[in-house]
Image (cartoon, rainbow, N blue to C red; front, side, top):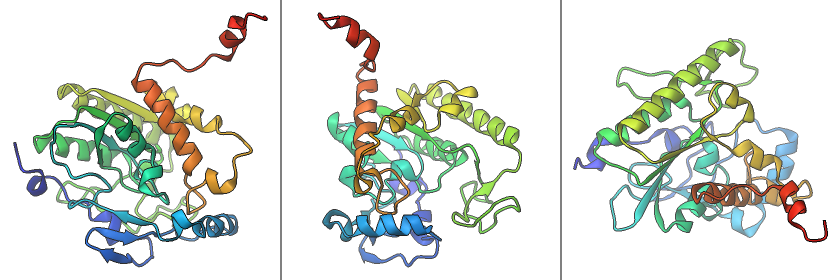
Amino acid sequence: MVDLYNSFPNCTQIVSNWNGFESGKVADNEFKYYGLDNPTKWTKLISKKISELPVYKDMTYKFNELGYRSDPFIKSDKKNFLFIGCSFSFGQGLPLDYLYTKKVADHFDAEHWNLSIPGNNIESILLLLKSFYNSGYKADKVILQLPYWERQVYVGEDEFIHWTPQNIASAKNNMHNHWLLSTNENMYKWNWWLVANAIKGVLLENNADYVNIIIKSKYKEVFNDGFDMDQVWRQVPKDTPKIDLWARDGVHPGKVPHDMFAKALIDHLEGKKPADPVLDILKNPQF
């Protein structure tokens, strides 16, 4: 088996560019929480309340030796679950134990392998996955959280991702200046579908047991092979306190949504069907 630490691409993007914030290194492979660029007045208010909670106040991001928020990529006697996605699966603004990926891995007593990167895009996932398999590694379960289809990527001479400071003219802000945003909706839909199927091909080629997570229900228009996490988000109780609804940055999903995401995904992986309220009523002996 190839030595993963010498062959797999190191992830420097997470800590080398903190979108204008200092990296705040507190120990080897551990960094202070960082926030979003140009937060709105609303997110500033929400994130301030959340950041004062003890669990968030001193939170840090811990990375493995390759720079991922993940267990070390070392094969053990346990199963290993590989997660790949964007900030949602990275756990932006969340302590690790709140993250749905960690909850799912722990439920199945599996190693928590996570290649997710904030601001990630679908092309990066394809390259990461190919590099993972080319390194000689396998995962018992692969869980792909496919990012927003508007995100594009710039690939440099080393055939891996380079963040770029450019946004094309149609972009309304520069909050995430490492994205290139397409001006043509049909083009980025087509590109997303094309790369999603290329990813599927890599998984099938490697006989992977995998699940695709779709974070917007509308993506089923072009790619219906996925677990719709958007439906779970819409089931989050509307009276959920803001401090439980949002992560520390006031933008990404917080503890309660991640609890619900984890439960829904665990049920899906265990083959349990979602509850049907109509059937539940019909089964009631008083009906």
